[in-house]
Length: 250
Image (cartoon, rainbow, N blue to C red; front, side, top):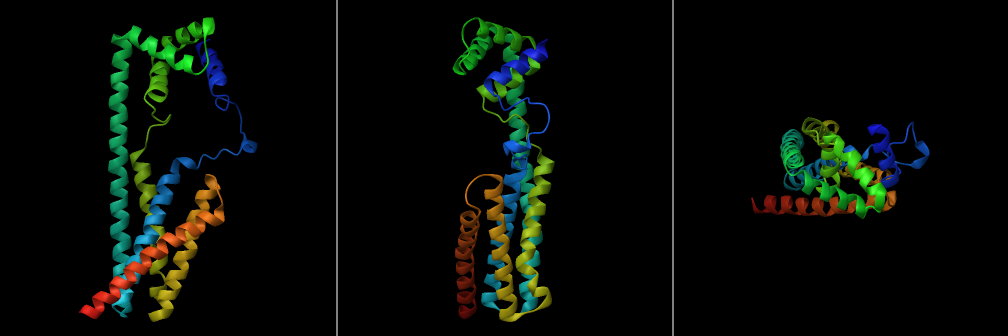
């Protein structure tokens, strides 16, 4: 009975939820849950390492130095990004857990106040009259469902809790794979050929990351792809100029 009532309420408030079976025609994409980590990690890996490699190439023609610097940037960056993603996501989860504990205490000790807040939540969604009383009564019977409602609708937390380990793995792997593109040509060649190939590979990869953003979200794949390439070009130009200036100064 409670489950059917909650599904009915969700169907009225959010008709896109709680539908049985697959809905391929609606165009919703579950990939959005890892989009931030993937795009952030890949973008940072590409931009930082192509800028690093270009900066070293601007200061020295020794391919061993360039390759060493690129590999070091890949490893150090992947570790740093993974740790950063883990710590930030873990902190977010701890904050969420603390708020959930507080919300549970309020439901158990300040029930009337929480009921008033719940009524206001559903009233703002357009539910009034006897149905409002029925909805609030049903929701307040199940404390877990009630707490989940308050966490999402009152406090604004996403439905799913963040996963620190998963975020760390996705961020680190995305960074490492992307950061390999600028380094790869120096394994097989050197000089201007290696630099040109490095820039070309990185440009293609950056365009792909931008297109992925557009494919999963909205917007023009062409525009977002070139946007990524343009931003990276600015970073690479600055790094290369600094590398040449340092080389001249030395």
